[in-house]
Length: 416
Ligand code: GLV
Ligand code: MN
Ligand code: MN
Image 1 (cartoon, rainbow, N blue to C red):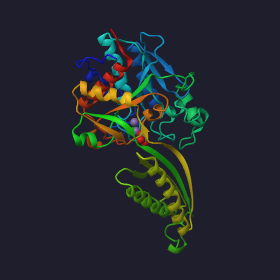
Image 2: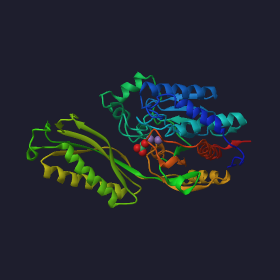
Image 3: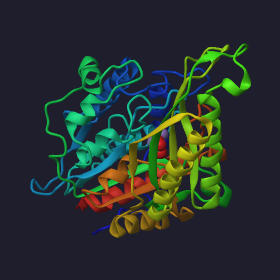
Image 4: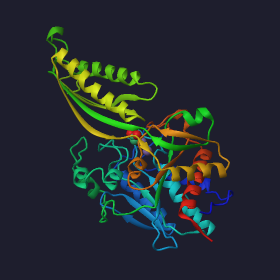
């Protein structure tokens, strides 16, 4: 396969302008974004992306999960497309780059190919996967999961948000439920550009992370029930404090993750306290424990210990406790050929690079099940992500997109 010439680069300024333009949709409260999946803002972001893709001469496919596919034709009608992409939805207090860089970096590839008048044998398709974040609808990476055959579409449509609104209904309401069968597309390869969301690349002074693996994840939703009663007049010995039960379980979660240091992490990011009134002892809490590790046996151990030790805590306190697995995926090993294409691209372009393991989940983790897949990462300031202050430099974004461009175009094969 002919590699692109080392001087072939994307237009970093145009990429940055597009990132800034997209970030105007669903602004957050502190400079970032709140463009949660299947909100009106998500619909607006999709429409803007579609208009850009059409202006770049692409056709747009839409499947029944709302996954978007902007296609630039190749010269060989029988060649499977090379896919590239990520997600446009954000956390409620999300940054401007998590996911968005991967989608707009993909678009920038197509715009650059148009500028340079380059044809590829394989079509190139830029994808926006619906609901990567999993905030409004658990689990994360829901639609790439359906695409890869991990979840059924009916099950996905039935997921409910905190207000009881179903995924399928909301997808229809915002007008982005397509007709295309989910997962029917076959991919020659898939590449995802993403910010690292961790501190390693910046600390090591590297431009590019060559992602060889992704750590696995387990989400267990825990419900603890006691009895809600007056905070002032209920004597201490009579309390059935579900909030205190949760506090003790979360101490345990921290201890369990530390016991596998440095290759495991654990926390609860989602917590609902009932009735959540200042002068009522919580009678019920529902929270989700997020454990991750690159090793499956470690994840399994943490999950099992949560259940055993959580039960002991609840029994000792006279509380009831229930556990439900609401999401997860096994650690991922990305495709050697695609990873090599990313590493070679970084070398060719003269970027410093490091092999890394992704700490976060990505659509690429599911797509890896159905197509040869790899990821490119660029640093982010202080490793901060899932925070409105998430920041990257235009140079980091351009370097990441250049590496993505080279890896994708080499895989899609330039036609001379
Ligand atoms: C996805 O954003 C994750 O939770 O890693
Ligand atoms: Mn992401
Ligand atoms: Mn995210």
